[in-house]
Image (cartoon, rainbow, N blue to C red; front, top):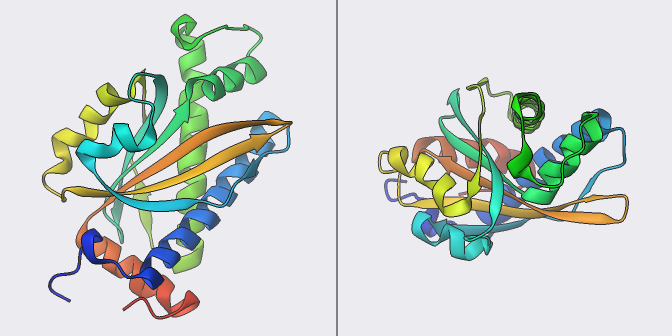
Length: 211
């Protein structure tokens, strides 16, 4: 499969990636429910293949401040992942877990940042644990890097390294739902081509033929 890439996935392969996203984000919702002590749900994810330069426009938050949680993965799968969360969801996390109440992310102090970093670590670990359970792959995760800025500025971080991997990303969009509120959430996957094929071949054996 010499020409395999994100550009030529078929419908079955896209559905498999959507199922992986669904399982992974379900695990994240369970973890968030536990640490926030409130019921958290996740909408059915939507999967798109997007050029890196088009991400801000696709997400629609180019001029909005967001929380970006970036980390690399290695071992049986290699690449980068990034959660993009609405500012108001990050603010809600702080206000639930800290005694200090903030009205905006610009008010974050060191304690607030530490809280968000720990939540980021739990979210990333929960997602990868779900993939590991599904595939039996060993996946190492770097310490998540948390950035709060305009989306375009945050995306410059993975873009520095992106040329070594490819020019497309896998964008999984869903909503985090809790207590009558919902928040837009995005997961950006930047896998190596070899890792993507390995993942599809493995999970395709469970959900269908990914070839």
